[in-house]
Length: 389
Image (cartoon, rainbow, N blue to C red):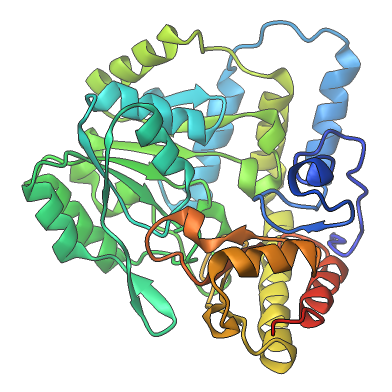
């Protein structure tokens, strides 16, 4: 089957955070939202049919986690990532962000030092600040148009008492898919200094053609007793609203602590539609995903070519993974606040401004490429017409 990613799906009137609240949040009625990381593509047809079938039952009561769900997760990870998980290690949560917050609560202490590697997904900072942990920035090092981890700086922070790392893999927003050497060296430092790693691998399935995501547990199996891996079908298959994710915690002792943290806030059951959708996605979504990644890669190529020809002050960075373009706008000559203001109020395009991702984000804007090409083209035409000076 060939999937039609050019089809426009009208999301208005669905309480879409991205589309229905844009005027309320920006003051611009017809702004094009290219910020938050959900797709403007319908989920795979098999997923839609599974949700319809579940809805037709008519009873939506308390829902647990059937064996078929865990088997679907296990088989998908094995097939897609050569990762043989232990079935008992899997905990179901209502999203990766809640899981990260729970892991911070379960495995660190108030005022404890936790390392993050900015520019990085900003809810990492929120999770630490809201839980009264000390944010330790270990910024990525930019080399030309790519980034690498500052492993020397990371070890210095570990020696200074940090005992937790929140790893973003693949990295949002810079688009790196970490290679075996990088992850192996990072893991070695973690072992030497008893660092527990919360590995956010929500974009694992979205490594672009030519790149391969490596689950940290497969690179460093001897680290697995100090490893919490967060994973979900939400980015992969556009299921974020169904609030279903999995957390792999191989250590029985740490898994018990995590489950105890879940109990303190009353979590445990799931959305019946999330279970049905995730199972269908993992059983039937492989070809849809392959075509999706090809389309997103073509969108990034289109973006890069358009900017080179028409928006020379905007330079997209290479994107090894995710569907989020990281665009260097420093040549605009504008500070971040002014550029964001002009993009929203003049060009009527809503991007995520780089500074919210922490140190190293200044001068950048993040753009969501998981949309029909006509939407991307319209956004770029609006930006092209933006008067900068």
